[in-house]
Amino acid sequence: MAGIVYLIGAGPGDPGLLTLKAKDCLERSNVVIYDRLVSPEILAFVPSHAERIYVGKEANKHTLPQDEIDALLVEKALQGLTVSRLKGGDPFVYGRGGEEAESLALRGIPFEIVPGISSVIAVPAYAGIPLTHRTLASGFHVVTGHECLHSSGTPWEVIALSSQTLVILMGMGHLREISEKLIFHGRSPDTPVAVVEWGTTSKQKVVVGTLANICTVVEEAHLQPPAVIIVGDVVRLRDTLHWFEPVMELSR
Image (cartoon, rainbow, N blue to C red; front, side):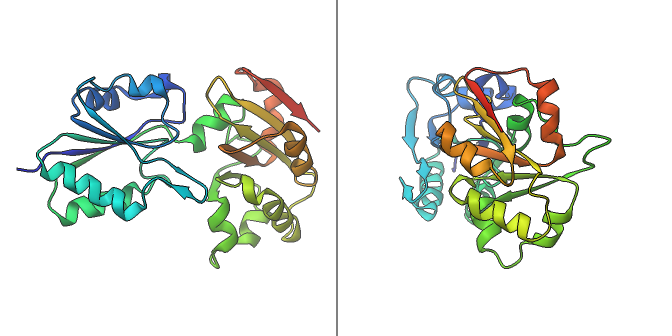
């Protein structure tokens, strides 16, 4: 009889944001297959007898290809084990959790989705930036840096001309191209931009600039991935609402 697989969102980094259900699943696991951005404090909930398998990914450096991760989940579950697939953020928000769930469903393996707090909302919140505000932004768009530049379906005119907040994940390597695209399609060069490195953790660093100069600000601050980019007038509220400042801030 196959075991069950829990596809768990570990949240954005702060272990205090892990859900009670996620903690309960981890404590009952025989195997935990986890990603790069999962904090050691969260892994401490895993029983000492459980097998831990690291499958973290970085740009151009994957411990295991996705199809091998899918196969690993199936293999462990077919051994009758309780498996936790532990991902940063939420498994269904750019976490490829949908693909993994499909692989399990095709083999008739039972699974549960345990949502996590996505960096899309948590990182701006820890930087003091509300994604929506009654007088500034009625909604927000979310894109990834790679997909928005290389997908023919990216609605640049809509994104650029909208007054809604834009959140960009995995975009540090394309920050200059993204800024130039937004300006080219009509967004003001003076639009405020914040970049948050290691958001919600003790290593959090925030820089603030505009579309015209954010690349220079980021370079001077030596920011590196992982980072979340927030574009829009709501960034101005950070001056009043910032509350979590473990490292530093640089503004232009």
